[in-house]
Image 1 (cartoon, protein in one colour):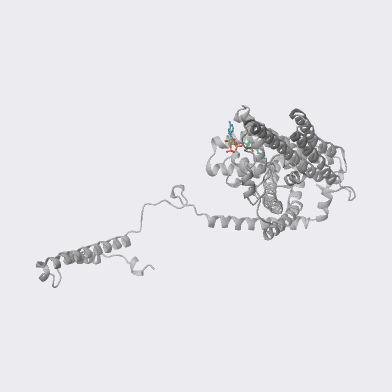
Image 2 (cartoon, rainbow, N blue to C red):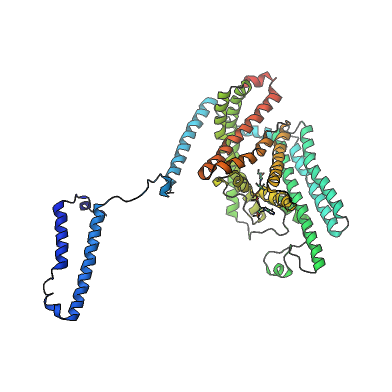
Length: 501
Ligand SMILES: CC(C)(COP(=O)(O)OP(=O)(O)OC[C@H]1O[C@@H](n2cnc3c(N)ncnc32)[C@H](O)[C@@H]1OP(=O)(O)O)[C@@H](O)C(=O)NCCC(=O)NCCS
């Protein structure tokens, strides 16, 4: 504890007295010291005593100096040169402010609109008629394409068809995987936009998985041929020794070409096929139930927030959009940005953490890296490398690196990947809405110049803020564009809807 006396002003007389004392102590010998001066041992001990006294005096002097001086060379904490980094209190403050301001918004919303949450309405988003389930039927039909891929691989492994024929069958199969659901969604009026988006999502995932399945099995065949030629062991599959010694039973090509193996891959939370996936030892029931609880809770929250918060703002944005009232349009956009961003964050956690971990735990799938720390992105490139790991891994393994290996430049390969990604984003939005506007496509393609701009002109915290801003503002712009165009296409001439807006 600090003594009260430490802060007492040091007077001139007191300071002088101390200094005089210290001097006299070092110069004057004490009682008995003169008698001992002739004895060498006594002299030695006297010297030691004197030295000890001196160091004690120095220490006392330093203490005194410390008491007198209260300043040192240092930066203010909020200055970037101070290297102070503990902002936990500020983070808590942000959370408290966020809760308070959103509580106000929540109350305002309730007072203005009443309770809009309606779980029954969610069912109607998927089904128009309770006895007709077109999206579910589409998903069931997708099994045909899985079986075609498996039987093509079996024939290729047995050498009953050539690589060229196999490739042609694959091209046909994969084209149908993309086109068949598209035609059904566009032609079948009973399928709702949400049901259509769900079915197309399933088919897109299947397309990416079957493409990976084709590539990996081809690599295995190529390695087997090399092995047969060089009479060396295959590198793709573990040796019989490691297979027999390990706990996990390993499979090697073509032993992997079974129904069980392909369906495990179809349900596993990855887009990249492997003959032997890393497996966890057991299913942890506590972990599984926690993820299930999160999934159920967050889905309800997503639906509730959309109905109560997003929909009223979107409705109120239609008029300013039609009248091209720019100031009101900006205000509505900023109003929409907050709930839209919350929904996106909740979706991220519920899909990439809760749902994927739930499926992985159920299937004892070991690799749980579904996302990395994208929230620390200081560049757009870092964001795309880290926010959706299954897609990024697929892009690298089956598209980007093969292009680079064939001699394409880095920029061309990156542009090709973003072009393919833009195509799939547009496919997943335009087809279910039955409306081709290219907003999603352009949003994705805009990532390339944006990535260049952020990397070139912004760094560190500014770069991170730019990434957040692009997410917070970019998405609601696309949402508003699609909703506006959907409204203009489908409801502009409907007086009941126009009145409701
Ligand atoms: C395009 C994309 C694949 C580029 O990824 P990237 O990590 O920035 O690419 P890089 O140039 O840094 O290289 C990645 C890999 O290629 C390798 N590589 C680079 N140049 C190479 C070359 N000339 N030859 C062979 N390999 C090369 C690197 O060594 C690196 O390998 P590693 O992963 O084993 O370390 C990435 O931005 C992406 O996934 N974009 C699309 C994301 C997307 O659409 N997601 C949708 C989510 S909804």
